[in-house]
Image (tube, rainbow, N blue to C red; front, side):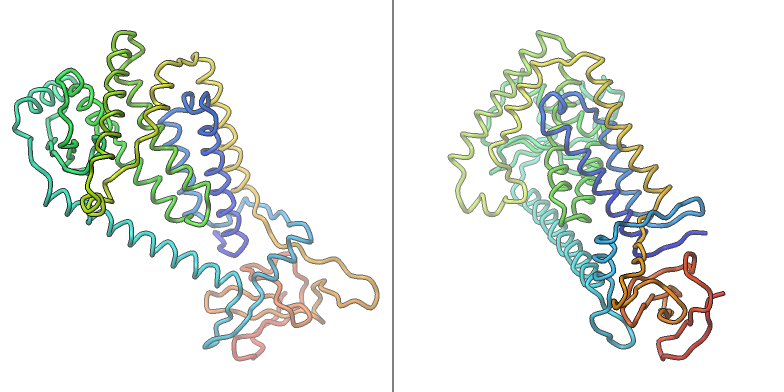
Length: 394
């Protein structure tokens, strides 16, 4: 039987955040950044999301009691502050409201920016899909990947660097202020199409969704920021395939894009930049890191070692979080003369809530909300919200 309580939610939150922090660590050091794998990153993000969506206690789960000082904190957070229409509201409930409200507000702003950008593309974009200089290259790239050419090419004012936009109907959007030479155009189109073929837009959305859920956690936003760099690097490596000649030509293309982005930044009108802000990117400092990474090739054993290390750590955290649930410990009997918080039938009672869980009160002080009477003695009275005794523990 599955149990849902404050303790299971707390365990799920802590586990997901630990995974998010672990995923962020590889991006701190360049050697780790180049070694960590794209597929591993995606799997780790999915696992973090799934752990958040499963805040339950399973039949095989064992309770692990928190230290006394942490138990006092969690008990304080769950202690009702006010009662509104028969509902008890605690600091934890207030945090839940703020958390949910923040996620909803950020999601609304994200959706608004998406449609604002889409509207800007529709109004300002110039469709160049049938232009032979684009169509010929895209047809050739798609044919080599055994994929139909679904791409539309849009030239857009105010854009600093090329981007891929959309999932079902992908757009390759190019800055209209750049006259791209044919040799560099092939690499640019190849780069953007690979993002689509490898489903990178879906990966970015999953990571963005995780960051929206944990908007109060800096680690998640760092993950969102760093993962974009990882996806760019992964495509860079797929294109060059460690071929020295291709690497040099591709590096020339990246340097060209970097210079053009700086030029556009200095020339773009303030009004246009404001209108296109959901699409406008900074000076794309990540290009410098991508150039550095293309010139450094870790060995197979380095890549395998880093991925195995982080996969093992994350697997350990996930397995531990399902085997054990962090519970609020009961306070031991205090010294003589002090009020006892040890649960006894004489000083303890339960109040059943609307979700059939039980609020625990010892000496009139709220301690926690539980779904099972395990670890509590027999004979403790159970009240409803009206203050009527309806049962007692057996």
